[in-house]
Image (cartoon, rainbow, N blue to C red; front, side):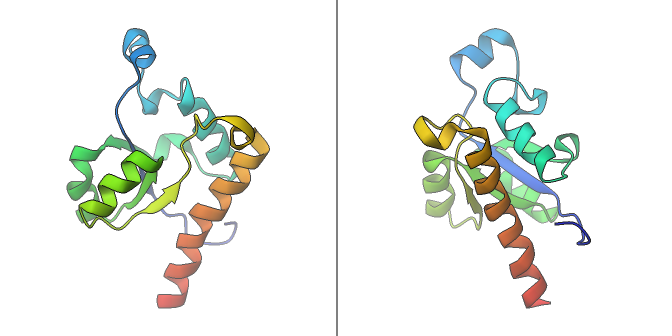
Length: 124
């Protein structure tokens, strides 16, 4: 994404895990699965602090502000699709197995997040 206009993303999660609730952390804190996501964003040259992180309920207002919606995980993506909300489909950062490997997640995040930028450039 170097040399291109930086876009802001809204990362949409399902709900806080029981552990996150006990710890009092959210996606914005970059803890637990958020650490994996933040690491992938930094790897792309994106500042995690400049992005937005919400639950499904606040999406409409974010769209009106021009943020690109990113559904993290299949559950959220199904809800967004059912509600007719355009979004990018990013694998959840707490994925299991081989998909949990940082290098693999970084590649996936780059592919998903830069695809949106390339599509926007073609439509302009």
